[in-house]
Image (cartoon, rainbow, N blue to C red; front, side):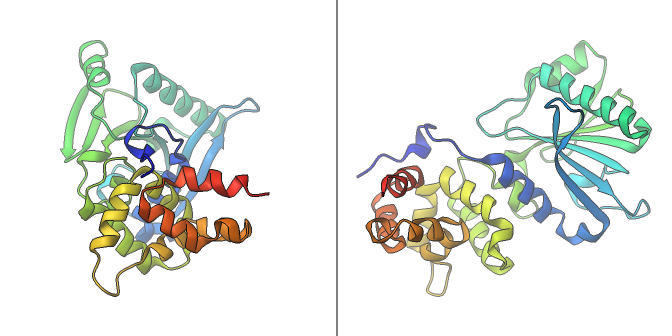
Length: 272
């Protein structure tokens, strides 16, 4: 059986496109009031913010737990599960926020920062409290409010979020439980318009291929199938384009046998 690289961390997983779709899914009830600007370039040089969310209707209060602090302009930074948000990263995001405010003439009181990562940033919080005399308060499970700065700041520890309330962000991890993975597959099927969440499903599948296989094997009749998961992840079309040597039916069988998505993609790219 082929080695599952998701357990060794050897493969590259495109987390950022998945993060963009996860945020939009989480805030879908407020979509008409928000403008999502991804990879916002601050200057001619490559200084980019992962996402800027503009609140188009200032009077609208967002009750979603991850966005209760939102004001007119909201900067969102994401760290992949393989990465860690350090003190230097914190200063970088602060500098991006100040630069954005200067370039766009936004007062700091109307700007917020949200950092999303999967781990608890112990060193950062210790530094903020001991060196900067700021405060860190957990306002709800996994959501930490930071005070002592000229803008509202929160850090979200995604692994501590409830899958029931924050399924899409909680899914941006490499250690999904079967219950959470099953809920993601179920909800993705309801969404339709597969291209809209393709990057998200693709990243989750690559990071949790073993768990996804187990969930599908235990699924009830009428549940989402592996065929549908591969199609939603955009892999079916890719494999079909490569011809009969690695068609999607063959890919499904190999995935069931334990091949990783990376291995199947390599097989597809090797076809002349």
